[in-house]
Image (cartoon, rainbow, N blue to C red; front, side, top):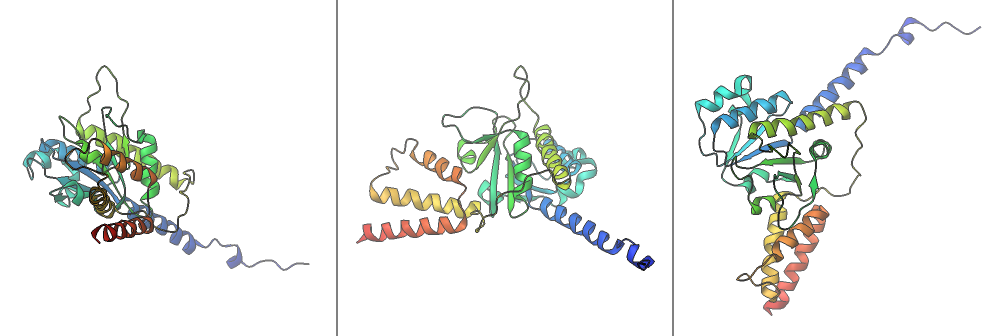
Length: 273
């Protein structure tokens, strides 16, 4: 006759359960900290406060402000309501390049068609991709000016553009509302991931190239093409834009960019001889 197991054998290991729960909470918090909401040249400080409130509603806290026209301002604090801590910790910078430095994924909001189309994703895919990639590297979601959005140069620094499909008869969205919509999609992706229903990204042997390193590559590429006589800075047409789109679409990693820059340097050495 088999021995009856003692009570210690049957008791659940609550210590292990607690550890797993805490690990998940830490992982989620760390991932949220890698997601930057970037507001570019915002005109109305109330929109900054409204965006901070929208972020905190959805568990986000990393707010970057690129040359806000009026900040700090009482109206921003008033609109933030219970999210004043997000405002207090906001990072104010002078350029988009500073705001996205170190990010392996940059997504820009766009409400209009461009002469040269860019890879476009919808809000749901945007939320899922941002949440997935924040597991391994910093990501940035860019919002432009209230009256004219992001410039073409700023949008060309993005891997993807995201468009919120609002009512075509009244399509203009308030800035804070747009932040709320996309932050909500990130939140929904995080909840789906917690349930184990969000597909994981394919493993890769190298991290994606950070935005600042990618920008340096594009500058190096333009210089080399000019040295070769292939690119005329006085008559650029759309060459650099199309080259940016090509390489951004490929989502290069750090090693690939390092190899390409080594190649460009070799070409320049030969030219200089």
